[in-house]
Amino acid sequence: MELKDFMYNANELLPYLPYLRRFTRALTGSQSSGDNLVKQVLIQHNQTTSSNQPDPKSHLYHLLFKLWQNPARHALKNTSTDDHKLLKVSSHNRLIFLLNTLESFSDEQLEGICGLSTDQINQHLEQVNAEIANELKTSVLIIEDEPMVAADIASIVESLGHTVSGIAATHTDAVVQAEQEQPGLILTDVHLADDSSGIEAVDEILQSFSVPVIFITAFPELLLTGERLEPTYLISKPFTAGNVKAAISQALYFFKD
Image (cartoon, rainbow, N blue to C red):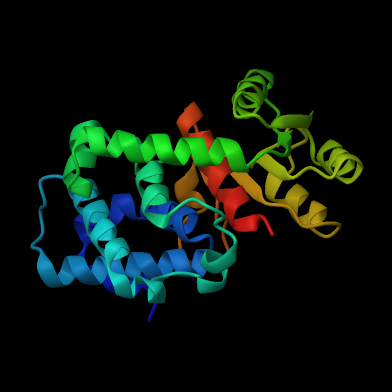
């Protein structure tokens, strides 16, 4: 059954679905597992709620939170990824971390979604931030044709303890730098200075070696339709340091051997 099959009962939720897909893919580490989790959330919505929720977005993530705490949730995830590539970060901490950084919910919204106090949520965030800092360090290639944006991303990357292997503004430069430096992570814009696609540049790079990739775009809804193979990790412009940190952490967790 396709994701679109559930949409006829959830018209009020449609504006939030591209971002929910982004969130669940970061949480589970794959497009298929993430989209399956979205289906389960929509099923729960159709079974337990009426339309016209006062805060539809928070309601969606509250249903997701409840599903993720269910002991039977192993059926919703990419088990092979979760078994040996999550290192020491618990799935519960990871979920709260993403709710805080990737979706930028307010404290009040987080309390309602998680059923926890702000102090409890902050304790979980402190734990996961310490785990991230201790476990993940790598070199990062930034593919971005706007100098100020590239410098901003580089600053965030370095503040997290990573190194910047290079900054490329064109398809050709990106491929050359990637082959020379073999970075441990790539952050790429979709539209590059030579009117080429960051997606095409990454496709060429991945023919030479395997590396996790995070796409950055001002139009995420165009890449998150659920109708084709799509990026698992995506940052929306304008972004915050928290957005970048969340995406980097998840990409490296699920990729690291």
